[in-house]
Figure 1 (cartoon, one colour):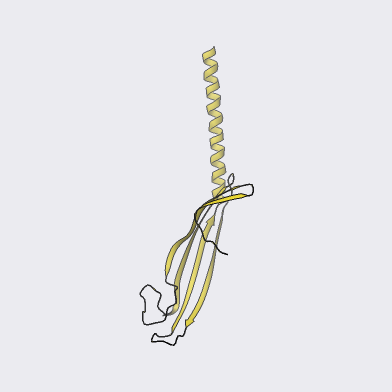
Figure 2 (cartoon, one colour):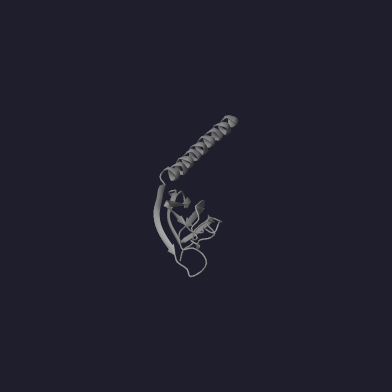
Length: 138
C-alpha cells in the first residue's frame, strides 16, 4: 500500500510540474506573440560645398529602421532592431568614406544594412538591467 501511495504521489507531482511547464511556455509564447513591431523612415538631402580641390557633394538617402519589442514575461523582455541606409533618386555625387567617388567631398552616409540593437532586458521593481547591443542617446 505504501508503494502505491508513493507512485500516486509521484504521478501527481509529475502532472503538476507538466502543467506548470505548459503554463510557463504559454506565458513565454504570449510575450513573443503580443510584442510590437515598429519602424520609421527618414529621407535626407545633404549638400557639401568646400573650398578645396574636391568636387561639391550632394546626396539623397533613405534610412529605414525596423524592429520588434517583445511583451514583458516575468520582468524579462527583448528587442531586435535593424537599420538600412540606401541612396535614392539617383543623387549619389559624394564620397561615402568607403571608396565610392573619392573625388567628391565626404558625406558619411554609406549604403549599409546592420543590426542596430539586440538586447534582453530584465526589470525588477525600480531596477532595470540590459544585456546586449543598444543605442544610447543623451
